[in-house]
Image (cartoon, rainbow, N blue to C red; front, side):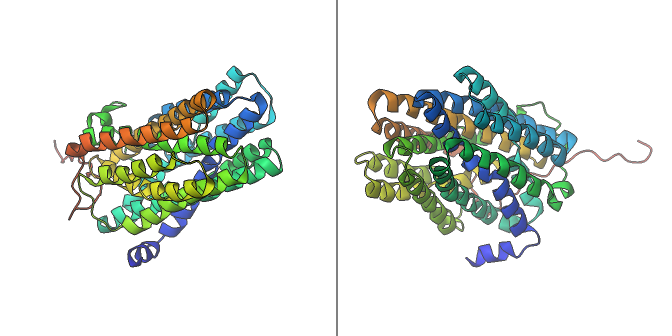
Length: 401
């Protein structure tokens, strides 16, 4: 804990972590809020899964695109524009009753305009701390974001069941505006300038480490999304689903804080994914609230540590000018995973029952573990090294030349 205490004493670190968590908090509510709302409007989990898939596809496209724009137009302009469009689109989903295809179009626009807070803040971090502190900062960030997944589901389920599903989405829309405005007003957002990338869009995917991080992130978040859909179905939108999801996230918080100081080796990602596989595999044996609470806590212990490895893997193998786009692609992988996990789980719930979602979650996690094993050859060995990005270098013009 002394490592984290030292980090939080660094100028601005505590403030920027809190601001970005607030800006991202509504996105810990939206998937669940939209799932509940669309299911209640249409009566089908499959339809809700399609709407979520459309939103996630929009987010997947926007991830690398808006991240790259930040190097052209600056962070603040891109964040402000996307925040406004996203907030209006989310509000429309809550307020208007539409056919499923139109819901999908509006959800796609909301996803396409998702503010690139995560790529922005992870590009800012290396400029705020020493290279020695960077990996622990990634771990703290991955752990702290679990607050979103601890409180988000509970807040969403409470508001949606007590006031109505529309109000769950409207609360998220308000927080998009409030949290986004706080993050955008942070001094670091204007102080750190992302260099314009000299490569073509997508060139960063030639780096195997970015591809591995994207694929494993896709499968990891797909597993989490399937668990979320499964719990909503098992407990029929009740408060128990929010509580068990919160316990799932508490496990991740505990894992992230306890493993933040552990040096990262090429095998670290596979080992942490294995924890998730074991927890989810055992969870599907008995869909009881106490059993699911225990087993999902165990599965959660691997989530934040696995994300920490993904962040460090990207940061340590790309140039600083490429970091925002690289994190955008990783985020895209995760968002497509969320779409796939929700859609697959939704159709399996309709087809074979509640347990189908947990089969989907276990399958996603197992494939993620296999991908991490295959990708270990491209995973950096950070034992004794820091996770700082590769410095950008360019020729210096000399007088007379």
